[in-house]
Image (tube, rainbow, N blue to C red; front, side, top):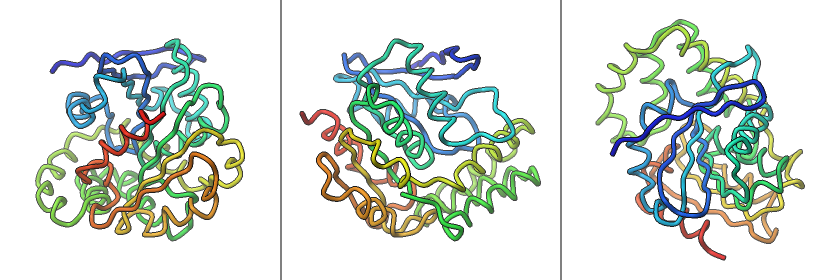
Length: 268
């Protein structure tokens, strides 16, 4: 499968994206924080989310190209909304993983006429100082421009032990290819996660919302779903899904997650 990388210009910014699927419904996927652009893994993402391709046209957005030194999650949501609007999309389903889920929640709160349903995975309801420890370690490695250390720390935190050990060598090799600009970009995006808190924007999220996480999340800890339940439980359209043993990257490692995501988005 060959997937073209597209660009959309909106609000003075340029954002890279790719799309797959032939369905009438638009589904926006916002990936989590990554060392290098998600567009380099377009074919793999399309294969992982193949269950969506007949009912949805799926749009996977990277963060915009031209980042300021300081760039908040709220600004990421605003820029993503502009890019979505520039494509002429409306009534979109949105799925965000980790930091992508933070962006998805802001999208739902600030653009209720745009977002029909939202789902997030491995996204904390709020980030504590302790919960930011893993991300802080990544930032330190990026500041030292140590690509291997960054990829290894990243992989060890997000994957279950057996998965990390399987790909440890490949992660080390990937670290050799990280550029100075990619280190700088990673730092800017990672630092934005520190102050995330869904509670001030929770009342603005009126669309159906699904939250998923694994209890053994090595980045934000085991209380992710509990945090959301305290804020959203009892609200119409809210549901939560708890895994065990799939790590922070449960959106990739839990074998039934994509099917559950599909069911959530197609259930009328």
